[in-house]
Length: 311
Image (cartoon, rainbow, N blue to C red; front, top):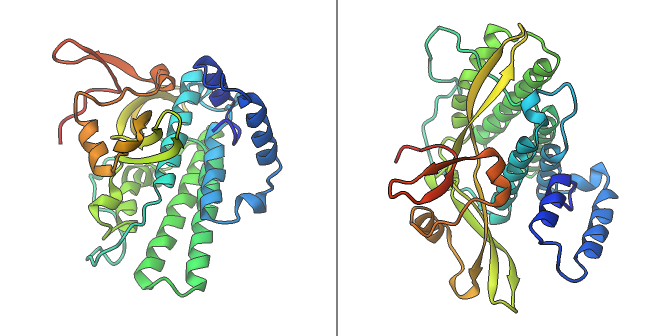
């Protein structure tokens, strides 16, 4: 993440002593220089590079004009963790296989109570814009190869509509505009629209607990594992157009980074078992700034977001 422009990642490399390897700083500087020269067409050369490009939108500091909680070091660490989690899933290189299903033909959300529940979209318009461009590129490429049936076309078009709406709402929030009742209904139900987009995907394709070994060190006989865990709830306090403050709760990805013996490389299944065992690795140090410490039942300290109900 330091290579693609995260100043916060650079700070953590220094703080943790991970830049102490011989020639590390020189190599990092060369890589950063190469990546800085990549133009927009270069970043959008294919889906993989486009995904790295949209993650860059999470890694820059947020200036005045953004909500206060987004201007803290804790939030920068949270965005770093989110970007690493997304990159880990990208490296996992999963192919999602679809199976026949019977979704609603209209793709409309499940009816909800008529009372409007105020909601909030994380205001990162640059991220939504890049994700929208990536979705359009995916649609155009697959459509041109005649690789999409009618249902798949409808789902990708629906995803474009969702992202365009998120982009518009995030811009309104940053300019302190009041959202409409329609906007709040969308925020409340767009998860249902997303369910339509991925309807028919096997359960394994929707699992957040994935692992990928991204580097092998023949000297120590270890691999570096990048993994994602369960979704954790996060609480932030955000402003309203009327001048008030509201505490909102939303899910965030969890990310793990640790070494594993080459002889025991983890699969998704073995990682999921490890994640539920007493040998579960700790969250990385950069996650400590936005997580809450709690005591386990046996009295041993453990870092976690908040107590999560068992499935």
